[in-house]
Length: 163
Ligand SMILES: [Fe+2]
Ligand SMILES: [Fe+2]
Picture (cartoon, helix red, strand yellow):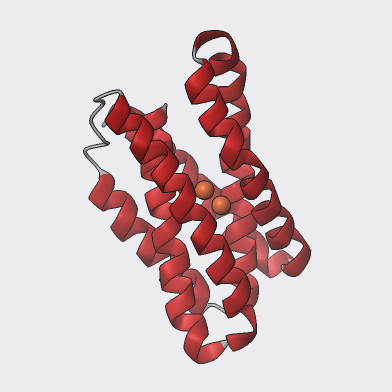
């Protein structure tokens, strides 16, 4: 579980890096929010990275896939417009939060340290989801982006449990 979360945070970092790159040129107004969310994802990554090191657990074999995949996803959504950035954030965090609450219900009875680590990031992810949901317009043309991004997130989570 820690390995999967660790990989996911690396994906999130790269999504925001790509979106920031595009937004610096095209939509400067969203840059402060993206920078703030990127700083959270870096903290989350460190949390799980430390936990893996303390426990001598290897990281996911597909870390490069999360990094590259995240960057590509961030790039494409950002190029579709600032609204697509918010829809992407909302879609990812909705999927991630669902996954985190499932993890928390298991870890609560099995692993207090990992439970605390997951708990510590949950509030940030909820704030990201809220920001995505409130800033993103809910027009039907954005529904496919939501469906594709949340589907891709689910597949990536499943894949990293195998790798
Ligand atoms: Fe995160
Ligand atoms: Fe997040």
